Amino acid sequence: MSEVILSVKNLSVEYRVEEGIVKAVNDVSFDVKSGETLGLVGETGAGKTTIALSIMGLLPVPPAVVTQGEILFEGENILAANEKYLRTLRGNKISMIFQDPMSALNPSTYVGDQISEVIMLHNKVSKDKAREMAEECLEMVGIPKNRYAEYPHKFSGGMKQRVIIAIALACNPNLLIADEPTTALDVTIQAQILELMEQLKEKKGTSNILITHDLGVIAKMCDRVAVIYAGEIVEMGTLRQVFKNTAHPYTKGLFDALPGNSLSGKRLKPIKGSMPDPTSLPENCKFANRCFNKSDKCDQRIKLVDIGDGHLVRCVSPLCSEGVKSH
Image: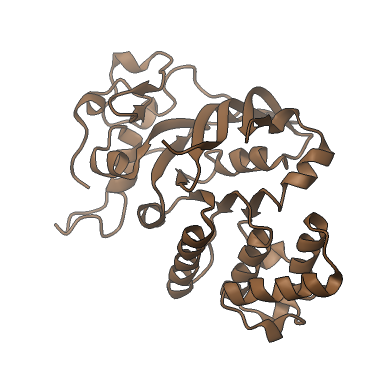
């Protein structure tokens, strides 16, 4: 059994704003094992990025408030840690690839110096040694080291994303969080970035949390999957369990709405309606009003239950006991 490197337990996060209390994450629990990739998948606004920022200790406080839970990294509770400890952790043992490479880099600083800064912050090395290590990082992600002294505006979107990955991996983190790492990139560059992440995982043995709305990316990259809806995990299991024995109606809806998922020529089946207002979430099943299989049993609080071999589902639908072997 692989060692658990990260354990999120009963995490709930609210954003307290003038419009009301936004319940962004609601009683979320999961583990990440050493060397594995966990995918967090769901619609925009489901709470995926809030979970990532909680792990990084980067929630904007205020308005964000953690109302309950623990986040244990190598046995230490990140939520109870002081800022000094978090600064030793971020970029060193835990790194994050942020969603927008266009805005994640400092436009007035050489890309190489931005990598060197991270290295010098966490390692007792000279400026010259830090530069040498930064050049190696650039080469590692496929950028010639002679581009060290260039500004971000001279790089394409895909190249900027490679620089972001180089920064994230500069200190060989134990856990890498990638938040929509292929957003706004063309298909060719997307494939290159994903291949690069997979190669680095194999070489470094890094654990990964991959946040995306793209089920194709999940299928290519992940060992396990957690499907997030309205701030809750509605289904979680191995890649095979979630893709081949889909149990939650929302997960099935995501597959049915995929272009090219069926060769029959049938029209796509979009999920009707939209996610509930996070300032007034229902106490019962949060997907009930959009569900094709709704019943009277849905008018209650639904727990996440194990339907076999660690396959967890938050539903009372017959799908949960039968699975949908169609993907």
